[in-house]
Amino acid sequence: MMDWTDRHCRYFMRILSPSVGLYTEMVTAAALVHGDADRLLKYHASEHPIALQIGGSDPLQMATAAKLGCDVGYDEININVGCPSDRVQSGAFGACLMSRPALVAECFSAMQSVSNAPVTVKTRIGIDDLDRYDFLRDFVQIVSAAGCKTFMIHARIALLAGLSPKENRTVPPLNYDRVYRLKQEFPQLEIVLNGGIHSVAQAAENLQRVDGVMIGRQAYQNPWLLAELEQAFVVPSESLVTDRHAVVRRMLPYVESELLSGVRLHQITRHMLGLYAGQPGARAWRRHLSENAHRSGAGPEVIEVALKFPAAA
Ligand SMILES: Cc1cc2nc3c(=O)[nH]c(=O)nc-3n(C[C@H](O)[C@H](O)[C@H](O)COP(=O)(O)O)c2cc1C
Image (cartoon, rainbow, N blue to C red):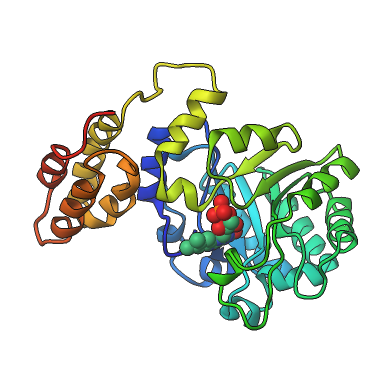
């Protein structure tokens, strides 16, 4: 999620869930091809399985970007056909590409031909007045005919004029039925539902109808949900965390090594603020980190002190 997630966030999330598939925020193909690809692609080995999400619409540039990702070991390359922001539309990619399925198919083919990892597509159920099941079906039909086997579907349309990206994540209503219908019509495809999932029960219910669920905001704002999902769906393993304090303690060596390489404490702790959401002491935890982690020279001791506020649960 652009502006929210980064590699520090994913390192933290991986501790909460050893099995969940993690995705980068969207990185544009142009930035990868013309910019500082080493920095943009940097990730920690523990983030695997990790998908790189790329935004763009020039097949050659998309392929070059995908290859850069595969060369450094990303496990999946995901094409963004869901972002509604003006900036993205002026670059003619993101959600507006839903109306150009042949171009998405061309990007897919170019990318898959140079990638040893699967290339997948994240999209919406429609855009603007193209708010019909047939439109979604035709899009998936054309892109899957090029060989794409996995689609993440954010179950609301994007309104490309008049709504901000934030409004486009809340105003158009969720329509899970359209995603279920897609799965029925394309049983051979892997269909992953996204949008509004905030509990284990809701994830379990949807997994009866589709192949997977993708969780955005709730995983960020209440990251303990990831540990609950792990407990609910994955065979217990030694790496499973059982309480929130243990997660924090497992972050400490990472924090120390990142600080040594010049990262500031708050760049890491900002992702940890929601760990105790709903628990006694959550507010004091947040406040201590928010007020102290950005100070110059702040180190792991800030986290140690913050840990005294919430109950270990
Ligand atoms: C701050 C923010 C940034 C986002 N950035 C991206 C992005 O880079 N790529 C993408 O595919 N979706 C992005 N999204 C959309 C989410 O991935 C997701 O589709 C949407 O929030 C609905 O799922 P949710 O209800 O589980 O959050 C972003 C969402 C938020 C809140």
